[in-house]
Amino acid sequence: MEVQEKVPVQTFMGVDRDVFLRDIYPKRRPAVLRGVCLGPCLDKWTAEYLVQKGGDMEVKVHVSTVPEMDFLHKNFVYKTLPFSEFVKRASEKKHTEFFLSEDESYYLRSLGEDVRKDPADLHKQFPGLAEDFYIPQFFESNQFFSSVFRISSCGLQLWTHYDVMDNLLAQVTGTKRVVLYSPQDALHLYLSGDKSEVLNIDSPDLDQYPEFMKAKRYECVLEPGDLLFIPALWFHNTLALQFGVGVNVFWRHLPADSYDKRDPYGNKDPLAATRALQALERALHTLDELPPEYRDFYGRRMIQRIQKRTHCDMNAHEQSTSTLPSSDTKPG
Picture 1: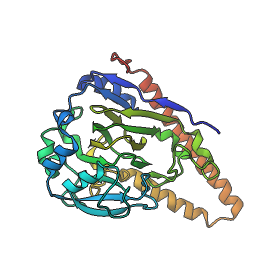
Picture 2: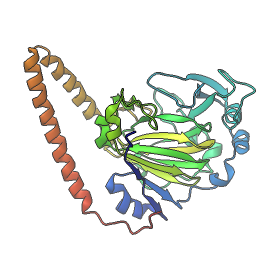
Picture 3: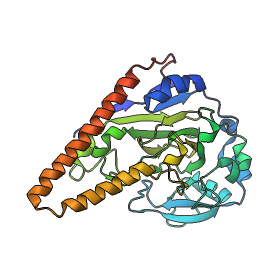
């Protein structure tokens, strides 16, 4: 069977703000950061402690009979549970109380007070736990967008998708495998919006998705205390190797007015990109007015224009990043 090219995500030790902004951030590539102080959460956040501190506040969670959750086909249901009961169920293998089956999987992605307007903020939704977690000060305070609390059952896998903001994924409890794909491999990922249609990335159906094997696979395993820098537009797929607890911190990489203000999740395309995609749809509808051979010819010309434009822009970016100073940190 054809094997997808795999590349380990580079690991950096002892990263502070200056090292991050000088040696890691400008390269726009994922990086595992070890040794960053995340606070007492690393010692405290056991399932028992979370149950005690979280109390009976109700949370909306994903529940699925299979561990591979698929957002495109919605193979899960949303249920509401007291936080303490959710943690109890998510941390156990077999359930005496359940919604769908005794081995169902659970996943929490915290939400803002008004889920249609407010981004998640750990300090607002879980103030008793937020004091245990130190957000790395790698960006300006006015760039902060959200801090998302994530808890998942062992074995739970989330669909491959991209976000439009830069983020740090902090692993606090348990281990997690993360697979990433470059934005430059988008054409090989069979996209539907911001998500890939390829659910099983480890054993894909190559009859249905033959181009998928051309995508270069970046991979790492996060241990408690690790931070993963995920640049905007990088696709990522996560697999909880153990009961997992973490915090995802998002910040605005572009000017604030580039983003859709009605987007509490931080996953809507920038406004200019949305306008460009809408214009493309209108152009394609206009092509439908032509006979088939003309549609084919002018469609190819459009593809050529786009390829030339993006290829030139990407070459310029690669040349600028290649002149950056090399890292003086220790690769892990």
